[in-house]
Amino acid sequence: MSKRAYNFNAGPAALPLEVLERAQAEFVDFRESGMSIMEMSHRGAIYESVHNEAQERMLSLLGNPSGYKVLFLQGGASTQFAMIPMNFLGEGQQANYVMTGSWAGKALKEAQLIGKTHVAATSEASKYMDLPRLDDIKLSDHPAYLHMTSNETIEGTQFKAFPDIGSVPLICDMSSDILSRPFDLNQFAMVYAGAQKNLGPSGVTVVLAREELISESPKHLPTMLRYSTHSGNNSLYNTPPSFGIYMINEVLKWIEERGGLQGIEESNRKKAELIYDAIDGSEGFYSGCVNPDSRSHMNVTFRLASEELEKAFIKASEQEGFVGLKGHRSVGGLRASIYNAVPYESCKALVDFMAHFKQQNA
Image (cartoon, rainbow, N blue to C red; front, side):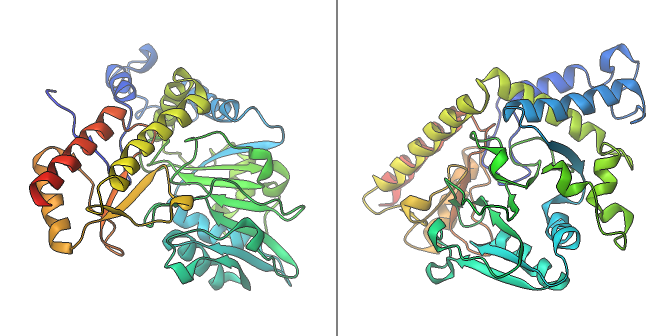
């Protein structure tokens, strides 16, 4: 391959080149089995060792908190939006949600189909261009749980801290920023994430949950929609997305090799600062969408003076090998998703392109 694309896709997103090369090297014959890992039984010892290793490595990166279980599920975070209230919203309770944008809204909408809900805080007044203060989160009476979205991929906002809500379970959709920085898993009853941004390829949803939370699910639920089904069977009740889980394990190794979550956080901070500095220093040619206090280190959203100029930016960037810089269709504008695997060199190339485009079009 002569040149890798500058991949700023929001998901499926960039994977580490080193991981792709490792997978390529053992794709046809995995561990001298004479088979690809995609061909072997998920009940066999070779696959199960990879499966268990990925679970252990995930918890190890988070400091091995006690009492938590890792699940590998399917259906994306979107299925979790429904499974959470189905499993945890009891009679006489309300599901509490912090409304921060597109994905928080989708989670809330699913919960409203299941039972009573309460918006504990919202940033709707700013069109979700900032985040509610933690002190503004007000729980309902009899809350079943509080659901938050740590990073809004579309709008480009990110919580830097999370509330202490005592015994009320805190559940968080971390699809866009899981393992991009250290966090205290003990603060949460459950976090979940689609793999296709920071963890691996699409097709796997990772859930990290307190064991007591997921050990018993309502018996009236369909079997595959009970967390207890997957917890009690080590995520092997049905055939798992085995190649995706293998890839997650390889990505987790790659994170370890880069100094764990502390090393990854430092890398992500440098990438984000580089691009935000280019936006803020452009004398108004580029403008950041989000209040600086709420800016994401994963999804950098910005605008130009007109849609015509933004279209010209996209066209010119694609000709130079940049991929995925068009903002989500629901909000428009521009977006650079700079997940863990996006190298600093790609961000530097983007900043250089932005400077050149400004010079040509200011």
